[in-house]
Length: 449
Image (tube, rainbow, N blue to C red; front, side, top):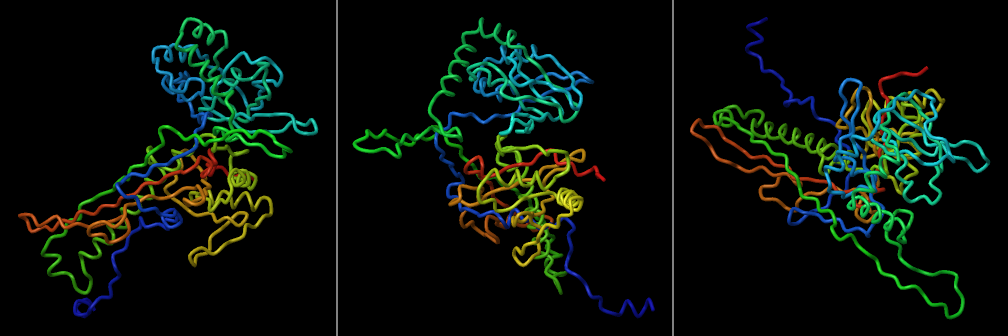
């Protein structure tokens, strides 16, 4: 048997690779050819600065504010005095809270600023018929109370109640006022913030375009012009590269029935494309998950991704093209639908059957991180004409084998090893902030009966 086996020809598969995924994001994004390697996004001037998130450092049970990140609070955006920010950060006092605890009562005077270091709290207001309504959720890094500078009566327009146990950092207004009284730079910063908040602007925070409607007779029409950002954001193409090395003896002698160089190159390209999708999600400079506006981030109501959470994510933008979620998040959403007796429909995309919600496909993406049983779900509108999310790549490249990817011969060294430089060029741009939304703190680890 063994001798006969040695004389027989084997049937072989092409080289396989476990890392290959569906890469739905690369397929679903509209790609724009970028000449010169840079893409500039011009937007209307916006007075409402995006609300970023404050960072914290933890030592045992003690939590402290990272001073430079206080610039993420709108009133301190662009403030340059690092020494004063350090002193301000030191004035925050740690306060732990339990689930269900009322942190802020509607109607009371605003006398403190809160930074959520850990946990989730609900923003509760009065509904149309006098009932309590959850208006939103604050989570790690969010800030509450800085709006006192622009509220006329200096009273809380809502209540805040803890949804989970957690920690807040609290700054009293007298402590903040004392710093402002002795720092002219801080006073000027506050006055500039108040002045910007009073400028005419639309509900998106953009400079208002003056116009008149419904008038009669010879009514004097307001003048209008569209103001643009003075420093628009520019996206430079990023690159993922590797050097493929193949010994000339392998290329010459062992290329039948399969071309060794061809299959080595194929697997290398697959690995680069996987890396490309990872960067489009997670890169700190242009990654979609890290660059989504904080105003477009929402929290789950109970932990797992429910149909209610998906609806809220969907309603925050027009023409949502698709959801993007880790497979574990999709499974968790399926469990929540099963609990409610719901059976989401499927849709056909590129000949494949994909789960959907409200007719919007939910694409899998294993590049979205899952940390301590928690992940995120993205929803996005795409395309230049739609003011959505777009992928960026160069036009025609020398030695191009796929759009945005080329293979260049580097030569043969003294050991007869052939080298090829394989490069993929790419980036992504969010044309307007509401083009992408993120459902955060999606619990995929706990099963609920």
